[in-house]
Length: 262
Image 1 (tube, rainbow, N blue to C red):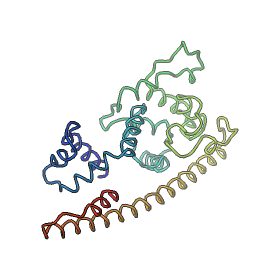
Image 2: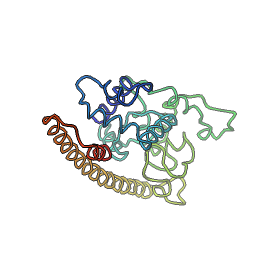
Image 3: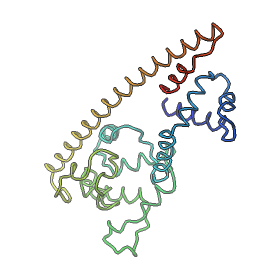
Image 4: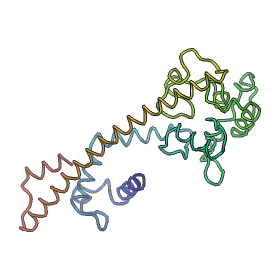
């Protein structure tokens, strides 16, 4: 629902805001059914330097995104657990990567998600000039069929063999949160026995739990802030209504204060 509301706001802004209009003209050129003061507040919000900077940063981040996925905000540990229960066997991050980068009809989200996987020199131990041109998903599936242990999260699982060495700061297929040193340890190379694999899985679950806890705390703070803003907006609307009923306009100092709060 949050995504839908965000898209609706963007659509209305692009449809009704005109850069060549004055502020007053843009306020009057509001969408049908939208309160004038609410539209004014929204335009003020979009005009703020911090809002423009945020929009610019988000656009830049989206342009850098190579692989659009369908995993949503669900945690890696939860997705792994659900997929493993559904399949009745261990599902590695390689198989999960394929699942969340495809649409319901089985096609990839975009060409980039398919094309990047063609460079598999790490798998074949060949020079870069000899590139294995198998499809990305086929290569991961082939690795996992040949060696079932490659499904278990490690520095030598199917994703590690396809993408190569992990970069500092993040782990392929795990999104933001755990770093390679946190998940695998500072000196681990290709976990080989069950005890090490279980320890890695345990670390992942602990880190995911910590991350989930931080998300819940942040969500609680955001909800509290949103509730305060809602109360403030209700008070503002009530005050505007009272003045309008008396056929008066808000005093400039009060109107300015409301604009600042919004």
